[in-house]
Length: 232
Length: 83
Image 1 (cartoon, one colour):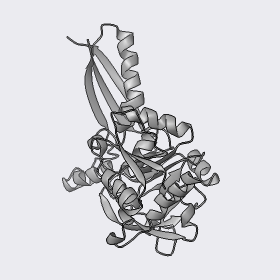
Image 2: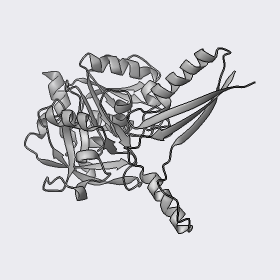
Image 3: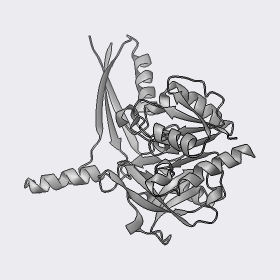
């Protein structure tokens, strides 16, 4: 038995099938693709905005996808407390849609960065991270050109005070420093959650480290945490 | 009909690594007086109405909601009659 997952497909999404594969073939969860021109969420219990380059990353990453017809339904769903996960480009879309605060700037190096990074779990008391309880550091790949999270000081203070920073870039020992920051992100931020705790955005790709055949499975705890929460 | 010309600039408080990198090129060219290079966007389009104030408010909404992200960017635009 599983909750119903919905994976939105924008023109230019390219991690939609990876997410689908992990949810069905690895976990046996029920999952539907949701085409961006639809407004029907097909009774999904949670929504994933996958990684990719929606609308060619034109103008600003995520800025055009944010106005796709399905996003009105996703915003309404989130406002009612529905669980929404944005991965990489999905995180950028959540920022543009105003479901999470802040913006993504170009990586400090100006380079597209594609490599495994370590994440320090800053908050394991969320719908998305409950099953990371016993882990302090996980290894997850990133692949982005615009992942340099920025927000004003007031918002950063609020994120910290409310424990909304869920993942920070760290070294293998969980030490959070400049050397471990792959893109110049403010405060090494890799993932944040909204105040209500139902919308998470993260630049790293958990769906790319969930299938044992790929050699690492740290990411799968995230999908299993969500499923466990939704079934309870 | 109006022609709108929009300029979008990064806010001064936002670092612009692209501008910095481009300015390195100026130094390599031997242009030693170039400082503070900042890269923005220029966007132009037409607005199909004869009502100038309606055109102005539509362009403003386009800028605010889509063309610029006000967390990191400022915008300005001009409108001129166009046929």
